[in-house]
Amino acid sequence: MEEWNNDLRFGAAYDRLEGLQARYGFVGGIVYPNSIPRGGATWSSEMVGLDQNNLLVRGDASLRLVDFGNPRVDVVLSPHTRPAMTWRNLTVVDGGFRERRSRSDYIKGEFYGSRATEAGGVFERRSIVGAFGAKR
Image (cartoon, rainbow, N blue to C red):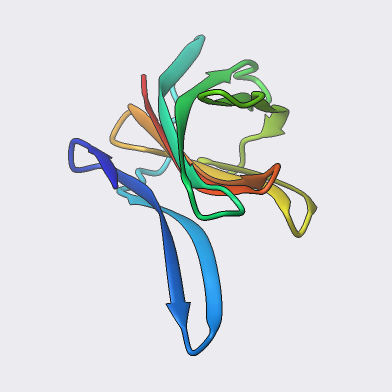
């Protein structure tokens, strides 16, 4: 599990119960209404996940808010030793963003903190399930 301040926590976990296995990412934090900043903004830090063999995958995370009149965000997750995963032009609604291409290809995130000082979310792509967190 990774964490910043008191506004955001995120991580990835594996669980096995009665023969069933599960991999999941989780993120949680304090969301403040109308906290999206005006002007250009970027957030960066890291991602963590589990691959199809339940091996830990770490990497970098970066987000860029690109259009404040109609807020959109680009997210790039760069696992170490694996190809980058990119989501572009995601619409920001009520401080959050999401895209689901299929059951195993999705991202869902939010901005956290009193001035959207942090961002985080969960994702699955290329058999990696995990979460990310970033600081402005």
